[in-house]
Length: 153
Figure (cartoon, rainbow, N blue to C red):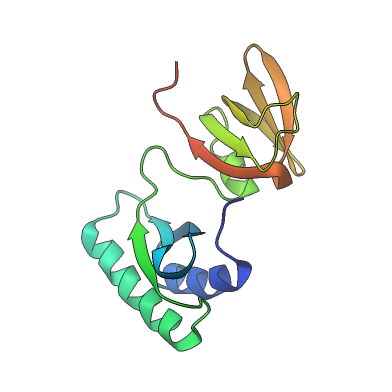
């Protein structure tokens, strides 16, 4: 998955959950001054700007002390939104029957790299998708990015 490095996730997750939010995932995008650390949080009901601000303030403190990212970066904290990114097998299981758009790390399945389909099941580390009237199996380890799609036709 297109997640932030494990060391960063291990620093962020306890901060987010300790504040009472669900830690959806985090991405580290870019390098150097153009780097962005994007953290997704969720909660029952909805996420407000004040929630994002509170979590951002706490994460900033931890990141300043631990300094796991070399150079400058921007920290963004947001809700996952309707077209939420997916980072874990548990999230795929939780959102069975949802339509998801996947991008693989490399073109491996019949020369394709991108798929859009309904999540049928998760068995072990394999995601079962219904794509174009057939079921395909995609190993979780091959997925670079995944996002729920709400307006797919």
